[in-house]
Image (cartoon, rainbow over all chains, first blue to last red; front, top):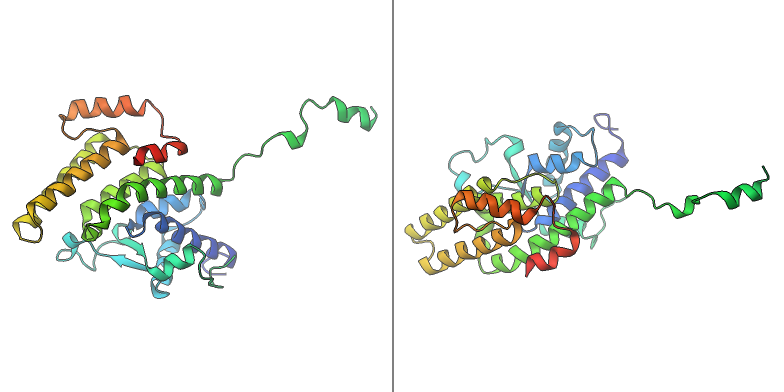
Length: 107
Length: 154
């Protein structure tokens, strides 16, 4: 149990993040529309949970933060989380496509 | 009433009633549809211009397509027109800074106009009032169904 969520739900949410980003690959999606997309499936999801899962997936090297050229000088690292862009890495795409299996994300 | 008789008088057996689709299936279906549209429209387009994926305006246009198709969020013609204009301006800036040649940048903007027209039915060459009329006429109060993905993309 982490922050009131059970392991099964955490896995499902992390998988859904990968699937949502797969749709746009090699493009990126901001955290805010990503959250709204997930809320259709997990109405109780809170943004803090999503932020935690995004951090986890970044450290697993399944997703990357994208900083658009126009933002690089202005708000590179200080942009609020909801406005940050994220994209799948090749490793993340392999997991999303089920080419490789990660037990930490598996059903 | 005997059980056997009751069974024959049921107007519709439980097996005949299709189950309502699960929320996950509905979302997955929309995501699949959006993936096809985005891949078929933007995939070939960005093959020759991979640098576009780092342009904020370009990312926002693709994200608007995602929001429209998956999140069922209304995207106003004004929004998409302003984004595309901003995108065109940023391409011109790149040309000014020598990062791109004018013909290539012009081609990128023209291609994007075509894509926006295919997805939203909005013709960016018109003034904003006629854009709004085009948009309403094309949508006709409906979202494209999943079978139109291929038509949209061609």
